[in-house]
Length: 337
Ligand SMILES: [Zn+2]
Image 1 (cartoon, rainbow, N blue to C red):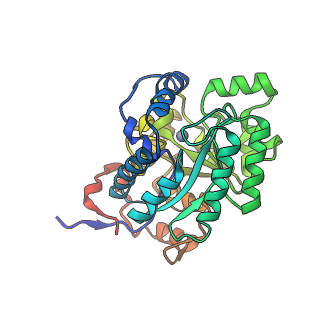
Image 2: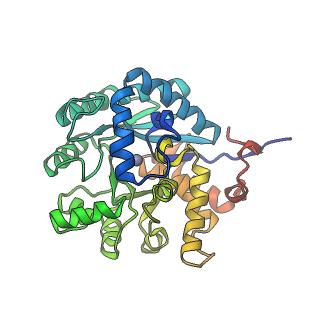
């Protein structure tokens, strides 16, 4: 059967590629227990440069089969992610995961920052690789270190990539400690601007949404991971009504199992429609924008393979591609070249 063309660049704005190695490990657990008692111990045991290189390659091949042309990764030994991306010719925004405690890649936060800065310099003019500064979250990185990371990002005009407002526990703990929601806390520290990408944002109140919109920060919605870990459903239709930017991510394969942005777009739309009993929410074109141009913009692209974002948007408006695939989802019938 002749394949149908789908020429728009699909973008996966938040993943931890090498975690394809942990796919299926510790299913059906809540985030904190899953992370602290299962994922982190496994990572301490297994994650080294060769592991990251080998498994990121697998993740990239899976993404390319699904039409993904650009991805944003947060993990350890990100130089190996860059090597894999360049070899397989996929655009990557890499971010060495920065935490206050020792990681497989860095013995402390400052070492992680140094690694990040050397990556920024190394890939300054690279065709395939860009470098983000990637503090893990507000619950694993202190105020002082969040600020240090932002200063580094500002120095080089780099994207600041962080997990935010993912679980109820994160909100409650943040309110207890700082008297603010995680979004308000980050804003008070001056972390939110056009170059900030916020993975998850499951729990945003009206004021949080207004702040994010005002600062121009980008929300990266990861509906599968949030659903599977029982975190909740992000208020995406409200966010879109407010006019804040939303792009999509698969998150790592340990929490969402597939590296497939079609699936993320489909679930994103279905969850909003079902939650609000309203089939008009997240229409197909908007979801396709989330999967493509919103992702490019979030990751700092102004054009892609000779087309401006505006031109790509016009293509979406004209519906020259096969948007019915969002729901029928038979990727084997699409030609992504
Ligand atoms: Zn994540």
